[in-house]
Image (cartoon, rainbow, N blue to C red; front, side):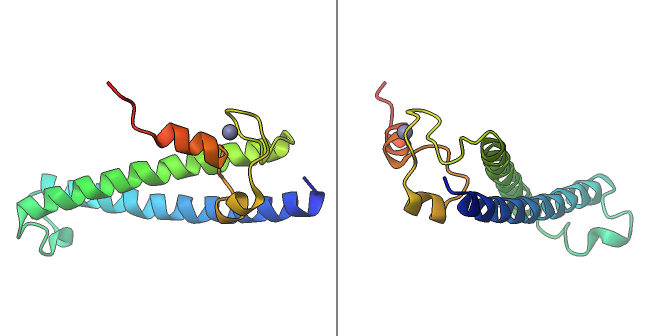
Length: 127
Ligand SMILES: [Zn+2]
């Protein structure tokens, strides 16, 4: 890979990393606040209408938690893509070691699998 495109990808990955970290932190703080509001059962300033509808609160919390997991997952991909950049193996499929298509990398700079491997990974396992 040319140095200039490696630098471009690194810039994009760093930006994405920062964005994900901020988003994760916000989500995390919201989850903490929601948990605290529940524990204190309306005991202080921050309960608003959190207590109004317990069922939907639980639903929202679970949705946020899976969102958090999802963000962490992407962040892991971004971090390992940054490592691959440092190691000079960025853009190489981690499974079959072929070069990942440029179009795919442009759309998804943290992709670790080529499109073929991605497809075979997503194929449902027969059991
Ligand atoms: Zn592959």
